[in-house]
Image (cartoon, rainbow, N blue to C red; front, side):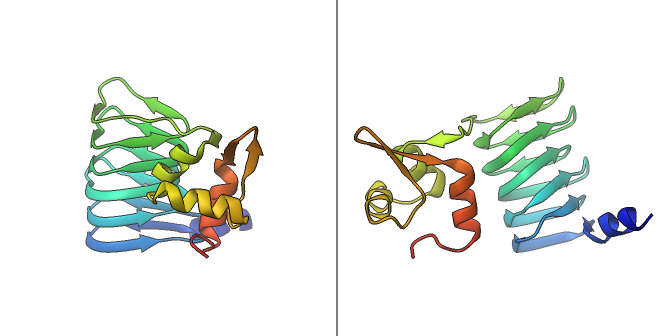
Length: 167
């Protein structure tokens, strides 16, 4: 019983119109049923209900979509599009599940466990020269294989979450 209560305390159910940037450092269960516009950076589970209308760039761990979304979606663990989902934009899932009836209008680029310098620059939306500089100076978690840098996506996500990007 105590375990169930603890899980419920970390659930946030939004059924309103919101605008701006929402960022969660700790894992939560976030459910959006209303309108949202802006940027959303979550840890844990994000569920977009069937009545939701979202115009935002979204980064999250496990994202389940049942409503309408326009924007870029990055799912570090899994992206699930339910039958009534309508997604317009570029998606970057580690794993992808699209139910029959869901609509995806845009591009899909699967996240890999390891990224090269060009992929990491695109993933972090920074210049390739910054990635090279950070790797050569040891500022970013990286491994050198032959003459190429390799970056483990999970290590990069932890590095970014710790606020070390660009430092």
